[in-house]
Each structure stands twice: as structure tokens, then as C-alpha cells.
Length: 451
Image 1 (cartoon, helix red, strand yellow):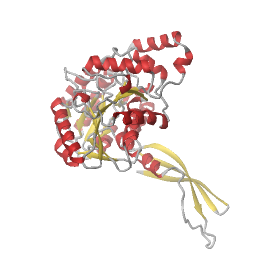
Image 2: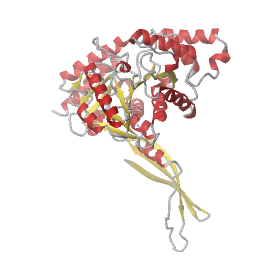
Image 3: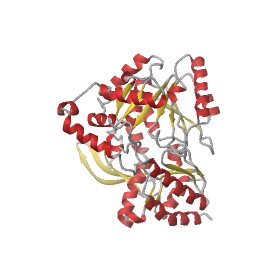
Image 4: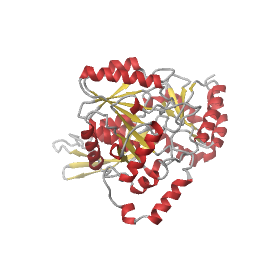
């Protein structure tokens, strides 16, 4: 919900110039987003009063929709900062944003310093191939081959500005207006925007409750002649579920059948920023080994705790249909989308840290600590096998109302409807264990409010 407040207005040359303040209400109450708009109206001089004939909003119509649907997660994060200032940070329990709490491995900073000290500055800070440094791409391909038994070379790797940049590059590469992209709910809501960026159509598949493995029966029904791609995110944001090997095999079988039926390739886009964050010995299948038309998007945001550095890569295997055209187009898309290339220093640094990892055990301890307490209090949770999110059933049908009630006890979480799955909430446990313990009293009050 948005509210407009008139700030001032003046008549100039037969037009009324009005300056508005637009405040966007958050999902849980309170105004989190303030925009200043200038609208222009024609003045009808045939009447004693001002008659409004037209209004002009200067931003693109598509951007109006994007602004109106701005990220709930980010809004909650901003709300958390306001509440911390008002009540004290120690009294606010902000589980809204998936921002890694574990520090990057020390080797990352050490390698950056070494590169800056020892390598030629114009090389470190200069342009390179739009696909990225050849030495970096070769090192990543070699590392993947050692881990997964693949046979990639540098020509299969394109360095990207994070996983989000990579998804936009590959969607730009593949989509014509009206092409459909399937995603399994619940899913990261920015997929909607990424697909819309290129005039594609997102096609959600309903959640499979309570396992939250992909709903393959509905998936099969929703594939059409317009289906160009399918996005899979495992370990999953927001549920923390890891899609099983059996699920992946069945999904691949369906795609093979539908490719024959439709007569064209359907690309499986594996969004993998959480690959290394898996617990209890759970294996995360590497999807290129199950379906030939798989393209992998990866980010070091979580595995090396570098979300702000925006560094990742795409893997486009030789086996994908029309490989040469796809790889060439993806390199060009990297340039024309304005990325030009992934950050040079970060490319060089991660290439030296391919065997490094953040301390995943810290997230595992948080996972167990929070999961056990929530169960004790009577909450229903999908036990996370990966990532750093807890997917919790709301205590009432309206997940936004439940989030608003939690806010009364200074708990901030994100409603499931933001992930196309109402009735649940996401709790990001990539926080300090001390904050989790401090939050227990607030969760007890929240549970008591529904007894």
C-alpha cells in the first residue's frame, strides 16, 4: 500500500507542477520507502477551477511496477536498522536478510594484498576479455573437474558480477519476449524481475508441502511450447531444502521428454550460491551430470562470505544445445548489460582461494540452536539441510499478519508470500548465536500470543 502526500504545487505556463511525497507501507506496518515524485498537469482555463486533464510520471512504466513491488526482504532490513536505533540493537532480533555473519577466510585478504603488491597494476585494474581473465577461468574449470568429475575448460566459464548478474546475462542470452521460465515455489522473488527484464514470463509451480521438494506433477503440466528455461535453486532460498538426487533425476527425465515433445531445447538454470552450505553429510547433486542442457550460475557470496564484492561465474557446458551461439551471446550480454566484465581484482583473488571456505560449522550450530528452540515452542519448521534459512509455518493463515505480530516483540522475518508461498515465514539464521539466544524470550512471547 502506498500513500501520496502533496508537498507543494505551482502553476507555470498553463501547467500545474505538483511535488508529491509517496510513502510505501511495509508488509508489517510502518513506512519504509519514501519517494519524491514530480507530476505535471494541464490547467483548464475555461473554468474557474483547475481541471486535471493528464498526469505525467517520468520513469518507465516497467520501473513503476518494479518500485511498487520493491523487495520485502530489503524493506525489512531497513526497518531493522530503524528499530535498532529506537530500541537498541541488542533488543531487536533481525532475521530478515541473508547477509553472511561468518568472516571470509583470511586467505582472501592475503591474496588481494599479494596481488596488489606483486602484479602489474594496469593488469590488475585493466580491462580483459568480457568473459573474464583466462587464467581465472582455467583455474575454476580445473577445480570443478576435480570436485565433480566434469571436463570443463576455460571456454565453458564466464566470470560474472555475482550469481544475480550471471542469471541476468543468461536470461538476456536466451529469452525472446513471451518466452516462459518456470520456477518452483517458494523461490527467490527477484527471479520475477530478472525474467521480466527481458520481457519473459515467469511461470511458478506450486509448493510441495511439507517436503518442499519440487512439485514435479504440476511441473510437467506447466511446460509448454513457450518454455525456454527452468530455474532450480538448491540448497534452496528460502526453505533450506536440498533437492534430492531422485528429484533431480526425475526432473531431468521430464525435461528430456518435453524437449522431444516441443522440438526445442529447454535450459535448466542451476542457481547455486549456497552449494557449499550443506549439513549432516547431505550431498548436493551437480546438475550438469544429470541433464545436458544445464547452465550453472555460481557466486562466492556465501562460500567465501563476499556478498558485496559481486563475483561469480556461469558454467556453460559443451553439451548444451547450440553451445557456440549461447557462449558467444552470453559474452556479448555481459558487455551490453553494462557489466563489461566481472571485477578484476576479485577474479584474481578467488582464483587463488578455490580450496578455501567459510566456517560452515558456525551456521550449523545456529541451525540446530534455533530449530530445537522453535520446535520446543510449538512452531512447525522444515528442517534445513542447507543454506542458512529456517522455513517456519505461520501461526495464522495470513503470513503478513504473523510477521506484524512478531514485530511487536522486535522479531523481524520475511513473509512467505514474498517467495510465492503464503502461510510461512523465512528466518535467516546467519546471525550471531548470541542474538539467537537473546531472541528466545521474544519467540516465547510470540508463541504465547497464539495459545
